[in-house]
Length: 478
Ligand SMILES: Cc1cc2nc3c(=O)[nH]c(=O)nc-3n(C[C@H](O)[C@H](O)[C@H](O)COP(=O)(O)OP(=O)(O)OC[C@H]3O[C@@H](n4cnc5c(N)ncnc54)[C@H](O)[C@@H]3O)c2cc1C
Image (cartoon, rainbow, N blue to C red; front, side, top):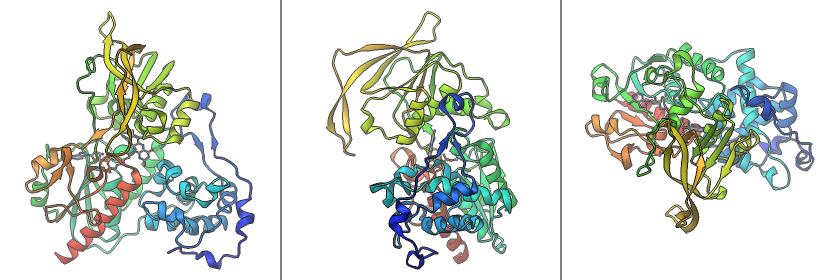
């Protein structure tokens, strides 16, 4: 239910709908591709109040609130921002979201809250994502924010994986007074917020400031610890943890099986490329500290958000020609339009209905070209997307000294293999109840990409929050 009921607001909806719209201010492409800083210029208080005042306050439940996987009370937040009550708006976001400043920046708003805004019919939607980030950033810079802690219960919970799912679970559990330790295989917390999503979409300092909230709330962090290799889930129970949350994501790059030449120097997997291109110094895992060798002509293979991130990273690293090769048409691309538009504005080119069939070495043994075949669209597959079918004899060559494979991700099956009675399915996804996050092992819960497959920050966060509620109930009844 909306905290500020729309029927109490004395507003003229038609007049609001017709108020002028000012699009987001973005740094110009030729400037922003010279560095890795954020692209969007944040709202100032005045601009935020004007934008929030465009909300027409749909009857409860508003479509934006329903479309948000966290069900943020967006209309009430818009009302509070319009009144200049930024602190109250921020607290409203904190009540339903564990990562509002992150979701405000990286959610595909055009497909979620903004996409469902009724103003889309004849006007421009309210920029709800940017307003969320504004309110929470404003609170941090003025009064600061502390996670409200519950009275200590003396119960210890182990969380495996410090991505959005694990972090949200941790945040909810400390609010209930439980002691939380996060075990993470990488040197720093954040999961794909650090080791995936590039800085120009989510500046690392925004995440680092967020992490300080967790530290101040007493969340313990154990880095460089791969559960399943260095320790086991059974071992964690033996150490005294009374419940375990698995939030290990789906981070193993899909391979281009049967395509010769993927092992050539110059061919990178997306994760390796994005981490080495976007992460610096001590945050870099030890096996990724060798600098990237980027060529002049880069091709990125794939059609998702990861592909857009790779294109844009390559441009910032100085590549001269950056081209996306995708085997279907733009209509079938799974990645968001917003990121694609930014990539195009920054200079990326797209070549559709194109499938690489061979990576070819030059005289120096390094990648020199990619042999491709033209595709056409055939019958729809099980998901309704038309299958790409090769056009016989249409092979052609694209000159490239760097190729990045951004083909999707699988989960790491290791926890299923090393944890007796933990049920997994389809290549290692953890079998967990959608509402509670319970797994086949009592006391073991799970959520995020390792349950759903690759998805979004916000859905992983919601998975972590739901599991935290079940863990709390489990610990109290134990
Ligand atoms: C390049 C890229 C860009 C993206 N951009 C966006 C975007 O703009 N917007 C959006 O909403 N979503 C985006 N996503 C998707 C989003 O990042 C994920 O859906 C989300 O991070 C999943 O959260 P998670 O906690 O389930 O997993 P992750 O974020 O993957 O975190 C899992 C953590 O577990 C750790 N781990 C794994 N195995 C073990 C183990 N055995 N022991 C200990 N630790 C382990 C990993 O190191 C990692 O830190 C993007 C994804 C990628 C790859």
